[in-house]
Image (cartoon, rainbow, N blue to C red; front, side, top):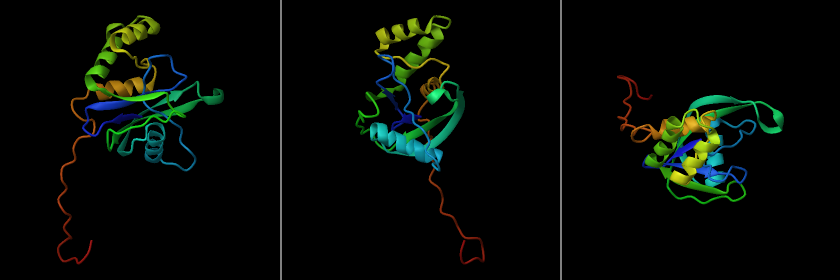
Length: 175
């Protein structure tokens, strides 16, 4: 899941201890039995970064053939809106979590475009040297979430217009 900052200008990415040094990606987790998608997003972001989120939107899905215990899993790509910038790393879950601005993430995505056909390791090394981090490659849904968000002008979650109060139908005492 990609978590957008309250002002829509930054995205929260993290790194797990098992990741290659320098790789930052979207936060992730597993759905528990009887848990809804919105619930798991809110729970996992809170568990990993102590960030509360409001809106959640499913963007896409991806089959993942190399899941836990050799099973195939379905990955859900979601966007979430943070309620604040405040965060704290849960070191039981993550090695680090950081806010990245759009310019940084656009540059990281652009490297993949400019170095198409190059070995992934070369691209990651170039990104690490240039930007200080690298993103997962395009075969991961996290890459596409970052690309979608970084190339979007403004906030991913558009400001909702103030709703006008609902008026009861003529002749009706209640709705």
